[in-house]
Length: 419
Image (cartoon, rainbow, N blue to C red; front, side):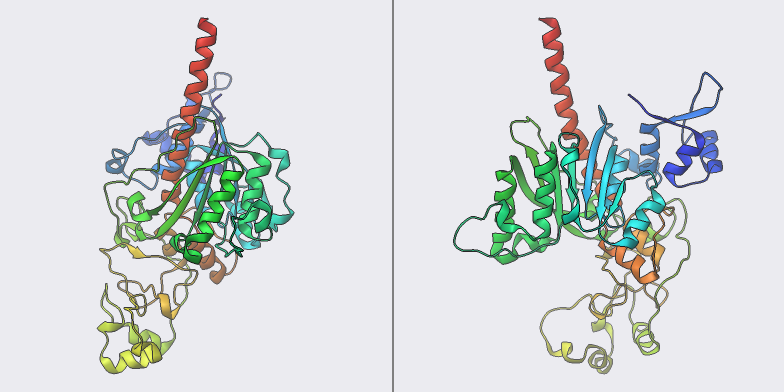
């Protein structure tokens, strides 16, 4: 059954003021129906979710991708939720969250500030009981930390990885029995401990009753994200469920830093100015010599040695050091701090790190998404997040998968009625 929202409810859900909702309605951006009892405006859930995504896309982009609407209400539990990048993208895709767990209090404040209706549980995941949600959740998601398991020449079972965050992820799956789960991690998990860590994870997840789709590394730049970020995606579907999951298809356009920070195909306005870190005086002097798209090798040799110190004599390109991003390239992967020496992310024109809202734009958060805590805490939350647009396309793949099961149930029901 379709849910409907009043003007004030729609405004709260989208993080804007009621006047903005009325303006979008008058412009035809958001269409209302009328309550027959009082003629007040009402907005259906699909329209609300769709505009959340389309606010970060122009008409040209909407031709690249046709949104898939859920055929029923699909529910999710998200673990290690952070600042909500994955959760927000999944919401845009049409998935409802019934629980989000996160240990960081500032990230939880961010989630509650932006989505007061979400059930956010702040605390150690090992203390969360998921059994009340058994059979009530379609999807479990989470980006668990990558950890090495001890080996004794044998395959390890579920209980053998107790004490790790992967164990807690697997425990949630065991206790809730979702139709599908998605784990996301760094690319390095593929080769972690010579590949044994990932093999053990897959073995345990299959032991819990799931068929694990071949893990894939997906590049965010293929999913409307102006950033060279890669994530390893691990998907499992319940055995004998007849579910079929297909990874989202790459989108045709690649977006750049200009698309993130200026009005254009990703955002309807230039990025607003916000707080941000600054460089120390000497560092700013050195970085001012770097051209857009350049890095430490563009410095005079004497200054290269001053800046790089012992790293100057080591091998490897170290292309992230003293790095100024250019307008016409996707940004390098964001980290938890924009001014660390190993991972510089300098503004193209001004000699400074990216500001908080610029960081958020590069991760495709909408401008209305506010972050709690100090500036350093905000950078940390954004740098750790899953890009929202990337999460949206991943969520659409989940919806497509679950819709297939809904079609099968409807077909079976029709056959029973016909007989």
